[in-house]
Image 1 (cartoon, rainbow, N blue to C red):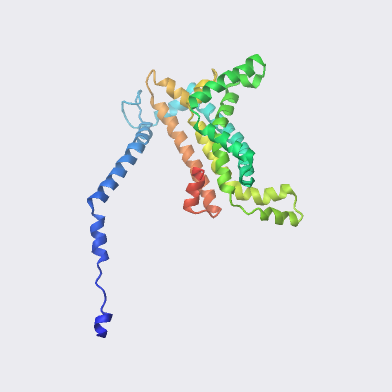
Image 2: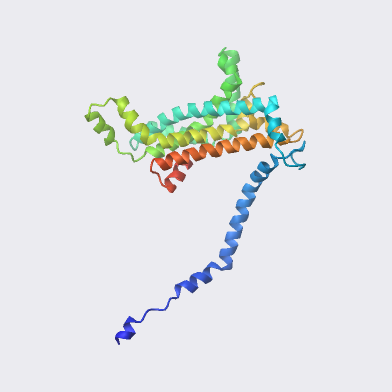
Length: 300
């Protein structure tokens, strides 16, 4: 009787698990997922590979080399377009990060039911869902009226126009990232600092800012990348002499793409990946887990 009760139960889970791993439905789903990711990312890999094409036309492979990169750095129009995009992206990142940080902190500290918080959230949400064509059409006459009719000279600068337009497009993203980062933060930390005779500036600099810094960095990155590849709004507000890189590529389609376009695009991709890696590193050093890192970068 004792032997019967103590007899080990035969293992059945392992064969079942083994058979389940070879299930046709599971294999089909995996292959389908691989095919979808290949469809999405294979064009990027192809562009990176063709940036090392020594031919005169991007679509016709000639031989491996770095002539596209050397030609890109010697082409004045390519350099100006890339530099304009980088300058506009940096300016939009700084401006939208400052405004988004202030707005995100205000929304995170607001109480439920505050009308101004609900109105601000609604306005920012509208800017996220507004078509870019409508944004560009609405900003263009506004810039022309301020620059020409009102004589406000900064509006006649193409780079200033790009920075303002890109800030309008990205400030909502930064605001929601900061709000998501700071929601649930214990406000008693600042009260404790005030009890220790710390000024509001010192409490903000030593307590609030370090807590919000990962979100601020993630928001700056998102704003930078959104500005870097914006085409529709940029095509409306640009001026001669301040053509950004995406608009330059779009106009180059009329005469055929050259390998220099792929070379500069590859460099910008590497720059974006480096910025993404820096943000992930900072978030990891701040003690955030993998899910929190992904959530912060996504604005959730």
